[in-house]
Amino acid sequence: MPEQPFSLKDLEQEMTMTSSPSATRIEYVGLVGGGVMGRGLAQTLSAQGLNVLIVEKNEEKAQRCTEGLSENMDREIQRWGMTEGEKRALLSRIKVSTDISEVANTDFVMEVVDEQFDLKQEILLRLDKLCDPHTIIASNTSTLSLTKIAKPVQSPNRIIGLHFANPVPKTPLCEIVRAFQTSDETFEQTREFIKSIGKTPVEVYEYPGFITTRVIIPMVNEAMYILMEGVASADDIDTAMRLAYNMPMGPLELADSMGLEELLAWMESMFQELGDSKYRPCPLLRRLVREQKYGKKSGEGFFRYDESGNRISENESKESVS
Image 1 (cartoon, rainbow, N blue to C red):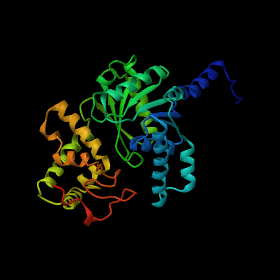
Image 2: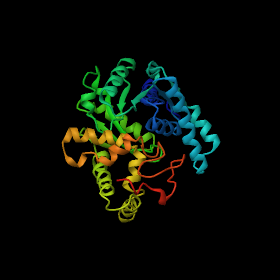
Image 3: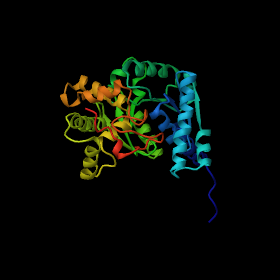
Image 4: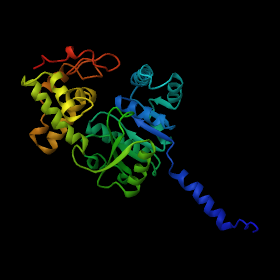
């Protein structure tokens, strides 16, 4: 049969099919904050072929962020999890800047700063003014009310929460948190984006601690009390929980991985919001944070760690802390 002529209607349909995805396609992601979580997100996004902009407060922090990215990837190379060529490719797609106005050029932007209400609200307000009206703005809060943070924002319908678990490159979960005014369109676009970067999205309606933080805090806190009360050593507590419940790491090493100062901030926020004693921080945690023993990032917490974040020795755990 002779080939049918190509009609104007066919042309319009083809143009719609090819142009619609590009209208919402995310290729350039902005991250405000280059700490542990920001660097982990940058590496994850870059590994999916996306360009990433990290905005830091000043040149010193920007330099620290750049060095941290390189060191993280060097550790992967040592474990045979990455090659030098892959490292160069990942870093080539990551830009670190101190100019927050550059986020205006990104397709999706996310704040990844410390768990401080005023700081997060200030950043969301600035992003709302800088970004295109169709750009989704995400917050990485773990315990704070996203609705309250976004209250003064002019376009709260495009504000959404993304709670990644650390380490981001290796943990396949992302909690997508809907604030009171988050639109369905914002949620759907964000969910598709999370899937596209290889993570499993879980929908969560706003409530202090969401799912993962709310569940894990009481367990970790109770393990600290068991240690403080001298019931068992740190090593034995973690060994018991790992073997009994098939956990990849025990609760105290998990706390060290989270960052003890971050964990303390989460607990204080949860206790303030819910008033439940199970979220009241253990005094032992407060003591370690005062001593600037933050866990893996500082080389010491409930256990001691080398520069690669590996425990130095089972026998050198903080068994005597009380």
